Image 1: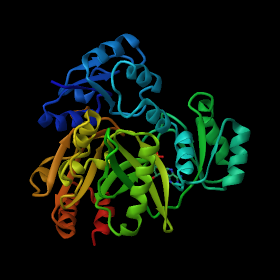
Image 2: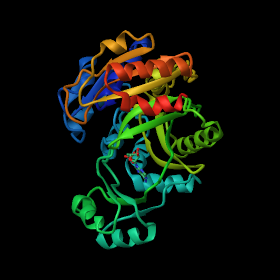
Image 3: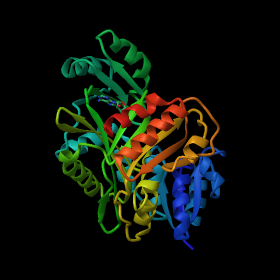
Length: 379
Ligand code: AMP
């Protein structure tokens, strides 16, 4: 019996555990809160990720360890890797936790990125603004997610407010200033690399965010054929450079015919949830196969899919459940503003059927605004 250890017990661990059941796998979770939602499906240790006592107990009980979120301290991952195989490797985790290290790596690999500057202090912020121009975005280098730890600087006077909001973090997690990209589309590559180096990626996904949080994803992305090979090659280069094992997401902006890499997430990703129903093998199961050294499954799309995120509260389930294209995912979490509490994926055989289902659902749930961007692409 193989036990997979997962650091983090949120919805990603939960979907991983569900996808691992047919493989006969057992799971052990480690989370710092006792009500983490994957704990409804798998045993869980509760404690601090830096606590060597709990890490030792975790390591004793698992055959391999992986992550459901990237902000596990890289030192804990390193400590654990001396006792049990850890995938992705702690160095890959450390690089992808740090926006500056990640962007430097992308540049070294010849992958275009929005122009950026390290911002160690206020003087550096002012000269970076002068160099990059306005608008631009000040971001924490580490520990930011879903648009948190970011401040948009639109006019020179915003610099002071940006520093007041984030300046105190310059000495702890670091800050980076990025040029604002007036992108036409946001695309992600969900890819997987196996222990033996085999690399596969799913069809490109187009994503729409609201207030920095993912709202909808459509895959295959429409009208992106000319960029697909470049996007996949970028993802492959990053995976090889980091000796990456497992699933990861590479987020790209498409701007005036150019692809610019925004960031990578060293884990299964929200923009890949559609793969559960919309691909031959889901990102969750292929992640498990990769970290266990099993053959990877086909990443072929099965029709066309659109995922809608439920943020804060769940809408009514019945309209999704009764739709022939509908697939409902309730993460078993308490409702809370800004929290990802579930999603639905609509999967259809063709763009027309998907568009009709999306429009009907948008009307029934009073979420026309959420479905409008993918519907516009499916015309
Ligand atoms: P991130 O946490 O870096 O993924 O940022 C969250 C969202 O903010 C992205 O998905 C974009 O919609 C937006 N964003 C982040 N960085 C930039 C940028 N340099 N230019 C324009 N929009 C951005």
